[in-house]
Length: 348
Image (cartoon, rainbow, N blue to C red; front, side, top):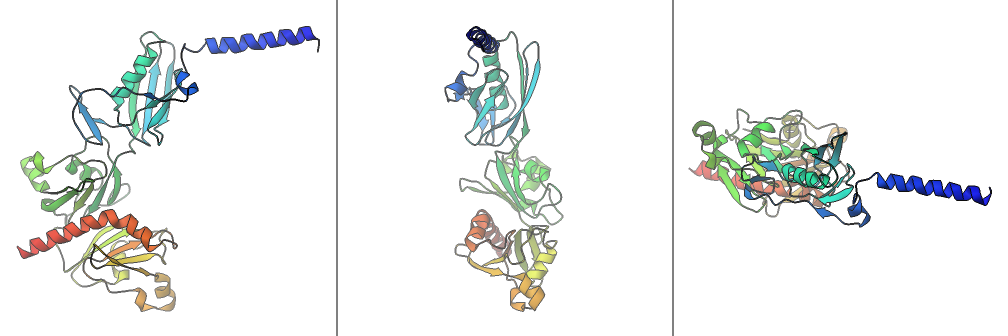
């Protein structure tokens, strides 16, 4: 190709690149090119809140944005309507498109504060832009619900997301609700800080006592004890269909207890049944193998349970005892306090 043609070709490529850059708002993309993250303005005056929510003066309580939350952001710049689903990264940042191309550190902010931050950035480039920010999926803040609660698809004992400000009664009813055997007068709330609250939710329902209906925080454990306590109380977790409390007037075997909990799930490992017994400060853990029981009639694998025994059914046959203790250790403290509460009730 002649040198004159090559010169013209390079000139055309240069003009095209220049026109593409000029089409972006001035300053757009600087945060990304510099490798830094701008800090979203979360300076609204807080009058109430915890790790899960924030309430500012003159505003309703709002969820504190955190890692793995999914945000829905809509921008109208006067000519185009742009929508984006944005997941908060593990470092608490989001990438904001819409021509801004900025990384923003948003962990701990509310949707109103993030909306204000994006709007202020857009007003540098557009006249009267409009912004909407909503939380599409709450994943960053969670609390445990355990004990005598209803179960079903998407509800029952387990670890559940917190969507902003949730009082304990609302948290329980949204994620399972009470059964006919739930003891509403002795519900327990274990704070992640170590604080333990014993609550009478009957007073909330019938007397409107908000002191007995505190707000649930990230990492809390809610325990709903049974109303009618039989001679033997067992706790089943892991791959059983109805995890929680099993109560029996007579001692049960391992297979009996699992049957009362709805039997094993499809993912349960029959070689991975763990029996936790004894002093909960230093529990004795035994691994059982139901395949030996069913195939070889090894009755030693179907132990008779003792009061307050814990059964954990693993998903993987390779699960180790130390893994089991790591999984159920947050639950053991709740059970220890429930046992103490039960004994006190009996003595009185």
